[in-house]
Image 1 (cartoon, rainbow, N blue to C red):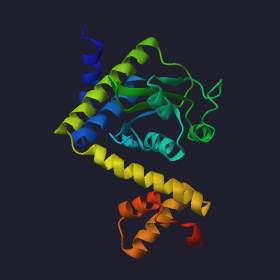
Image 2 (cartoon, rainbow, N blue to C red):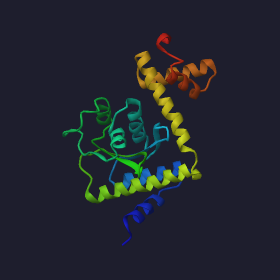
Image 3 (cartoon, rainbow, N blue to C red):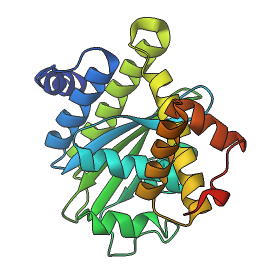
Image 4 (cartoon, helix red, strand yellow):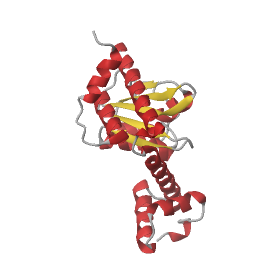
Length: 233
């Protein structure tokens, strides 16, 4: 019988290769993991050398949003898995779920998720990111599913190491940009006393009015050079 890594790689390779490069590989990993682990979705968050994090790929839009939201809020299972260097397993959000995510937990429930699992992506002392697994039904991973999840994490690490070795398509640079934009969104949300969507709309309106790029505006917000407190209407 083929070993577990061979089986997992086969599941990944069987996914449609609609997107090239490292992002395409991460997309196939997320889709294969979602199917193999009987999940409703999966996502891979990547941390750059500067400890900046962002979502590299996800099996579906909801999983991408839930993974991204952790960076906006600064809390969640993925953040804990990355910081603690160990899997964070919450098989039932309504049964003794951690109360250390007071804002993120309601967002999970509102999205229909009932169980969440996060696996750190690491090799030696190097921490690269997190594999997220979301389920719409409560229940633990079986022993075989848990072993498969760890193997999916190992396969993801290999893909990210290829990226760092210069064999990828610059996904870490894209993540640095997205993370800065999400940080700026969070800051503007607080400044205007609105929602994340309203904060993004304000950033885009400013970019249009000033004929500037979003990346530069986000950088100015994060650096404190641009503040929307006085721009309320």
